[in-house]
Length: 221
Image (cartoon, rainbow, N blue to C red; front, side, top):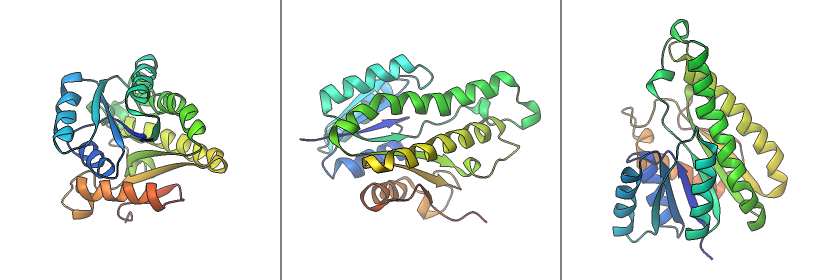
C-alpha cells in the first residue's frame, strides 16, 4: 500500500524538490498551499515525471481547511506517512522588533505554531494507525538564534521549534519521528548544500536514517 508525503507550503523550490525526491522512492505526494492553480501546476510537472501527485488549496491559518485537505489527500492518495511543514512566512513577519506589534506577533504565531499543530492533529491518527510516521519541520536559523531584525519569524519559529521538540520526545516511543531541519542561509543562498535538490536529499536522509530531532544544513558561526 502506497503512503503519502504531504507538503504544507509547497512551492517550486524546496517543495517541488522534496516531492521529486520522495516521489521517486514510491511515495504519493499531496501539495498544499493557498492557491489551487499554483499547486495544480506543480502536480502536473510531477505527474509528467511519473509521480502520483495532487494539489490542494488550504491556508495554514485556517485549521478547518487544513483538516479538510489532509483528510482528502489521505483518502485519495493513501495515508499520510510523512508531513513536511515548510510554509514561507509573510513579509510582515520579517520586520524589526521595534516595528512589530502585537497583531504581527499574533499572526506569525498563528501561522507557524497553530498551523503546525493543526497539521499534526490532522495526520497523527493516520500515522498511529500505520504504526509509523515522520514529521519534518523546516526552519531558518532564527528558530534557534533570534534576530531582532526579523521579530515575527524569530518569535514564531522559536515557538514552533519548542512545539516540534516536545512532539519528538512524546512520539518517539510510538515509532513516529518528529524532526527539524535548520537552513541557516536560506534556500539557495549561494551554498550548494542550500540548493533545493540538496536540501531534499537531506530531508530524505532524515526520514530514512535519522533519529535525532535537529539537523543543521551547515553549522551556525
